[in-house]
Image 1 (cartoon, rainbow, N blue to C red):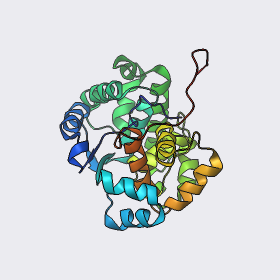
Image 2: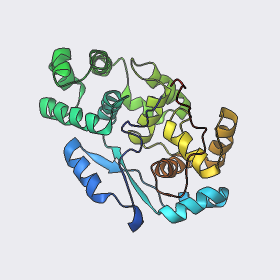
Image 3: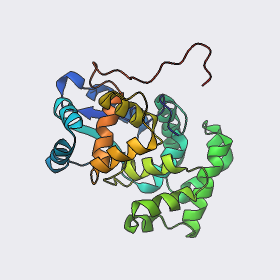
Image 4: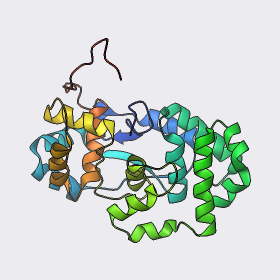
Length: 254
């Protein structure tokens, strides 16, 4: 399950609309995080298709403009990056990632295994996350998990394979598929900001699974690009749109 204060809400992005620009902030975060990054590639083919399929999303796309969303260049480090980033803030993840880079250099299986659990904990990674990272590194190093084989698999099988790893659930697998594999048709039901963006755009008080599937099928085969815009909407790209979800009372439990 995603957390609204985490790395992905919204994950680092830049848009061409001069009224919604965070280029200086993004450069600062890139400098803080370190490592190699690419942008999620899309263009007129994808946006024109979505515009033709969904009037409300199409208007949002026109107003927001192109989104330059950072992705991870290396799949192995992307998995590690996402395990570290679970349920912590953007700033905390960036700090931990910079410390890891400083400690190990290239984030690969041999380097992490040589570093060990105590050193991972020493830089601030929790015991459980350190165990999950080292288990993943060991499986890749021993050939028990063929990371490169994921590229040829359909989305459903990639999720199944990633979820077989310790510490990775469906939402984390979907984020790895977007930001580590740049898969084109991922819309996550487990992502709180995707849900919030849908509620804001379509003015629903809640989005159940059936309604979510209706929209997801409408976006196919370019669901990931739709996700970029839903994240942007949830992050305030269209300031007049508010979240119509019912407000919790003071006595409500989280």
